[in-house]
Length: 323
Image 1 (cartoon, one colour):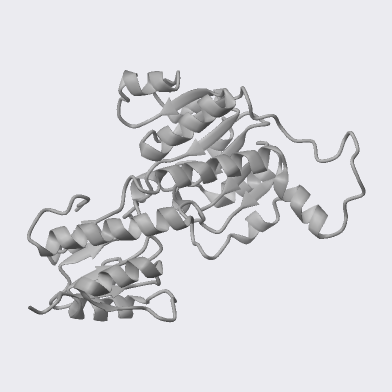
Image 2 (cartoon, rainbow, N blue to C red):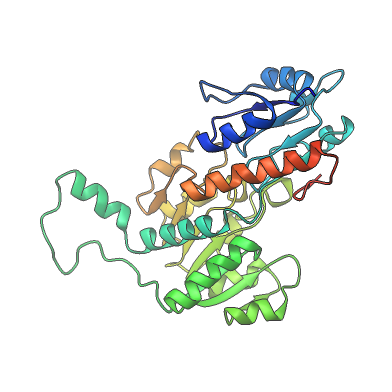
């Protein structure tokens, strides 16, 4: 029996690549560089399955082929706003993602960012490395206490709930939630959380605001200048969701003019390119999209893709089909 042909758009953990190679004719992107639209057109016309990542832009032009050989885009990651769902549907291409397995690690990183920006850890680390630390003094790098403060969470899915768990039970934080749909009161009760009706209700009462909402056109620039103006002057914004959720120009303006206390970002609107205005903001912590960057999470994500592929090519409904 001929094995289905599969293209990995980037390098994956070795154990996952080996597992895929057992059951599929796998082609690796050995130089691990992003594929172009032309590369995707060629792949979709040639391979039975294409396995993209959340940073691969697969729009209508990337799927503009007379006939698609690809039957499934098995995405390595939770978000799929980088894939043109309508264009895929026209070719009858299924789309899957990898929920659940990265929730803990992404919430861990969101907590890391919150602590870093509140306690000015980035400033301190740079100072020590530069050999510029002159010793302890009472007014040096004064930060903000995290314990007992109010955390506003935008998007209360799996990752948002894990963030609430860490913040409330670990740091005694009060949790305020904005979510597009009504959250089960039993879930809110786990964190003594309360849900508000709008983001505008959440922002003025939060000392920290952590974004855990989907990306895509609907949420593009959800955090804009008007909403940033609603935040407290000493409040902090944390984004581990999607880069497009935040208007980076507006955020840079808020940071430069100290209309918010600071921000911490793991994702960017045009990553890996960084808005040069952001680099000028000292009250900003930036990390290179490390939310799921643990051995455990990245391997689990890969094996989740394997499960979805196996389901699909055996004729079963993939457990994580999203389109």
